[in-house]
Length: 150
Image (tube, rainbow, N blue to C red; front, side, top):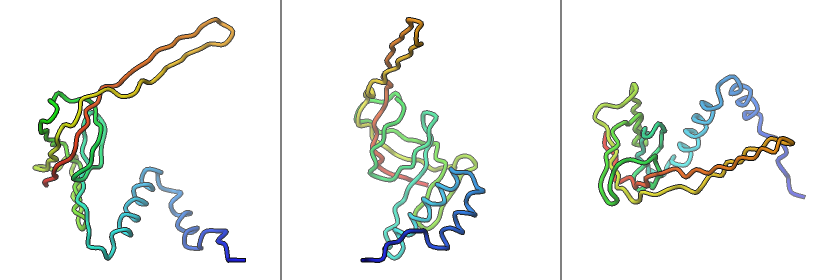
């Protein structure tokens, strides 16, 4: 019978005890940075990425990514510039804005203007003969990131 690991190593339990006192989103960010660093150690392949803000949301993007953002007024095939850049990393160093990085921008190309799948809303009150059905389709713009400049 092969040895099976039934519990975490001792260092993981100690780390878990220390991490319970910090907020969950910060824990997720630390974990992401740790694993991102592990996957790139020794490879020399560092991917430049940025965190941009558009439509009230934040997106982590790198060159070649296709993302759906809240609808922006742009024609399909045209180039757009996202200038609200919160953070830029080239793999070895990270630049964080306060709140934005001056002069940083992300170039993108508009791939589509479309509507998302329908979200069905159903409200009901039992024994009161009340049922309400409603639907919603959110407009979005699909873009492809072509470049990041800081």
